[in-house]
Length: 128
Image 1 (spheres, one colour):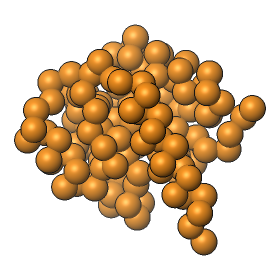
Image 2 (cartoon, rainbow, N blue to C red):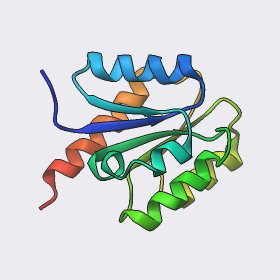
Image 3 (cartoon, rainbow, N blue to C red):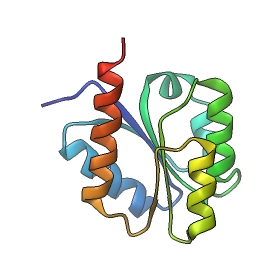
């Protein structure tokens, strides 16, 4: 079953990026995958198409927080899940204060990830 929602994954680690996109696709989601903030920001179609963003904090070049801030300038309340292998309580608070749906430490708990994805996409579907 193909779902119409497209999820954008931004992570500079190929194994994480590929693992997440494969997992999401196996659940029926369409995906875009980017290795950097800059590559996503240069693709207006991917930004416009996105139902949800999964963004790693530590990226080469612009970091994930800067990317999320940039997205908030382009989109009204972009739905984003921030992920990091080096997060702490301050990182979590900062992500939530920026407007992220959630902050998830790596390795990502897949069940928790899907709870957040389903909640957000269900919420979007119920909006007029």
